Image 1: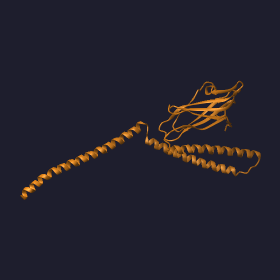
Image 2 (image 1 turned 120 degrees about the vertical axis):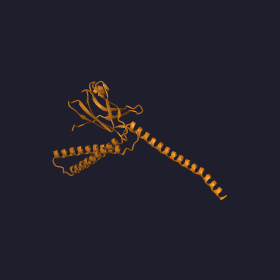
Image 3 (image 1 turned 180 degrees about the vertical axis):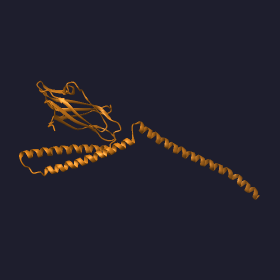
Image 4 (image 1 turned 60 degrees about the vertical axis):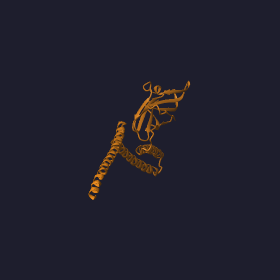
Length: 250
């Protein structure tokens, strides 16, 4: 009886071993399938970013270049502030020396302001904290040109946040003022003798314009109107009006 019980015990244990082996194989297949699925999802994710134009190496290079630019701007700001402090400590002498010192201080303050604006812009680009992108007029100045009656509009367009694709669109300029017949508005075509009807922009972070305008002798300008239109239909145009104020040419 003992031998029979032993034989029965051995025979009844075989199915358990087979079932255990099958369960282990099934579990291994499930784990392998999950791992393959995760890997496939990662490959699809990376492929999508690549097709969308995302280049990790290019982004890293751009970040490095911007950080170097920030360092240069900070150094330039320190040098300008040092020169400004030195100018402030210069005693007033003769009238010509006082006028020259005042002009130098004004130029240095303007340079510091421009450098600070540019530094703030590049810091915003490096931070890449904004998900939405917007084009705005960062700076606009008007200087007298040559010959008399011509002027140069210096304008900078910027965008903040992570720029995965260039911003494109057009800029319209018009000038409000008065003439002998009354109030008038001159568009860009009238101010450029028909050579230009609009300005086009295409940039990733910053673009500057130095547009020359010719104002008729009998026309008195008062306001400069700027309208920035995006190439995307879901972005509303940006319109700003600036008082016509001409700076002295450097």
